[in-house]
Length: 88
Image (tube, rainbow, N blue to C red; front, side, top):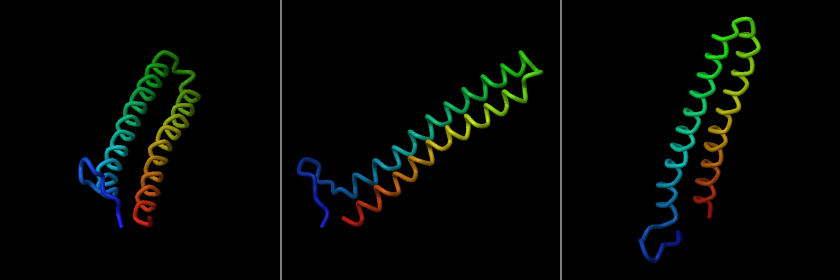
């Protein structure tokens, strides 16, 4: 039986339904901001030093993969939280 919050009358499932999409949205926005800054800086660096563009591009792709991994971690954690809320 889900517990009900005394002041708001909302169950724990209702709180999960509100907070999980918000956390995913914040993670996606932060990831998009980080990716845009990383790609912008890499493009500027490649324009300044075209001979180093291969190394810069490799570093940019690795950095972008790590930034995207953080968003995927939030998605996985959200799934775990939702599943744990349905189990208990």
